[in-house]
Amino acid sequence: MSRNIQGKTHQFKLVLLGESAVGKSSLVMRFVKDHFDEYRESTIGAAFLAQTIALDDNTVVKFEIWDTAGQERYKSLAPMYYRGANCAVVVYDITQASSLEKAKSWVDELQRQAEPDIIIALCGNKTDLESRRVVETETARSYAEENGLLFMETSAKSAHNVTELFTMIAKRMPLDQQTELTRGGGRRLNIRNGIDLDQSSSSDSCACKLILIH
Ligand code: GTP
Ligand code: MG
Image (tube, rainbow, N blue to C red):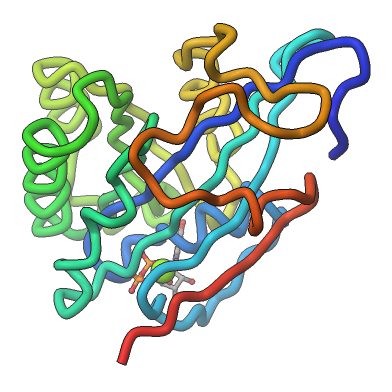
């Protein structure tokens, strides 16, 4: 979608973290392209996409999304992607108990090492596999509440709660002058200490960049 003419666009860096195969890339694909792949390949390094959400007639939130690779061998790269992030989605798979434990360790790391005011959402994905559920909603919700996290269960496959997840986060972001895009499309001051994404995010449509690691 394009920038609203009269209203304001606020831009934020969002990072997705979580064990491999929990559905991070699938959630992003559903959110950005409204598409789902039954056989999606594991992410290499990280992928970058951008998407906007209109909160109302006057306010658009633009997310610059870093979809990280969950495989263990890429773990050391994660700080590069969460550094300067305004918000994070930590994903687990409701059919894999170990993935919630992994999500908790990402939350610990973010709370220790990311920006102090980062907004973190815990996301239990694959609700379409209800018959195989092993992580109860209330268990995860209590953990989220105790740790000051937003919480939502989703299905990238059925699209359940995917837009709602990103909208919930957008509504929690600080919509002030510092996060506002200027008329020329630049930021006043937004991405903190991070990689300058201007080159890759100049278009309002989805931009995609793959970082290949050897
Ligand atoms: P890495 O890139 O390795 O970190 O994995 P990822 O977290 O990005 O997972 P990905 O999106 O690649 O999804 C892994 C597998 O789970 C794929 O086969 C997807 O089709 C499947 N998947 C993702 N989301 C869902 C969902 O909501 N329901 C179901 N049934 N399958 C899903
Ligand atoms: Mg992936």
